[in-house]
Image (cartoon, rainbow, N blue to C red; front, side):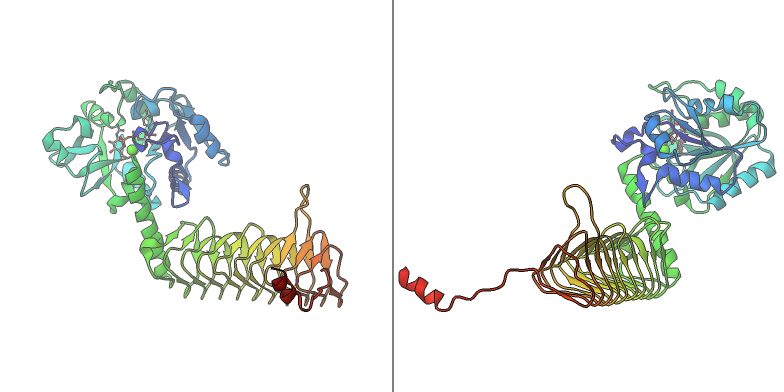
Length: 453
Ligand code: UD1
Ligand code: CA
């Protein structure tokens, strides 16, 4: 298996290598590799060139990939030639994929290889019939047989009307391939050597070539520009939304709902407009995710996340309620039935079963037990300028409003903290901690002030 990914992607007008652009949470090349792996190929070689260090670094976690370098990007045939030393002694079929064709399904790829092997062709091209074939190489046929592929720029007006296009994915018999590649001549102002030119070259040498047509033409959509990236993203999103709706999820407005491929959502969950679910997020059954919620986390069953919350690397156990306007940062854990209200931020903090932090709080590096009430405006002062320190609030405790808990500090089981306290020492279990200046009232003060004015 070869993946061509050395091109510059000039038409993207971006500094980022084209194949690293994300599409619904995964880069183009990650998507291509994921599909390629479903075939369990013996080896996968990625041809890299333009900004190869970035592409290789992005793929470093795939331990088994091989890389072939194409120092100068002299076209797709030239790119494939760079794999010669890696493959020359190998026999059998070789699949060539384009790193910028991200939506190909494993079923279509399998269909391509099966047909290639069944017909015994030297080369088989994946094609599709598009309503708007602009930009793609056109499949030229004579008496039904493919006789060549002509690129848009080289096509006659008549050829431009051909709607069957080259998908940029091929199966080849390795044996005649590399010699044929050597014979492809340069074309165009950039002196590029085009892989599709191999078709007419094979025909001239009497080698058999064939085609397989993708049933869904969107599968072969290539990404060359930002506009195409947006178009294909919207197709990917739509199919994810349809998959979830088919499994019983209510999506009020699919056109504004952005759900990455690896996200799972249980039935009877209702997703309001403008929600974004990222990465490997799991949302259980019967949840409600209100508008403008962004989640990259695990949310169990029967949870409600109200409008405008950001929930990242957090875990919400069943029956929890969050928001509106809450920010749950990495390491936030809400246990069964816990509640977090508006303008509450959490980080590396656990809120125990049935506990509540309903208004305007910051809980950082904190362990809050079960049935605790965290009063409005409570702040854990977790950072002393050097280290982060933990706050522990044991089961059943009550923290009055406007409290500062200067960590490291513990409020014992069933302890109380008086509102407005700045707690710097542990509050023992069952005790009341008060840490504020005693109030003094000055009778007649206002009257005195007025008289002196
Ligand atoms: C290519 C095909 C076209 C087909 C289309 C399908 C050629 C000449 N044309 O056009 O017939 O319809 O794909 O999407 O092949 N690459 C390299 N090295 C290079 C040039 C490109 O590795 O020197 C890689 C790119 O990174 C990309 C792939 O090959 O992943 C395709 O290159 P691209 O320039 O996008 O070709 P298209 O113009 O789309
Ligand atoms: Ca392309």
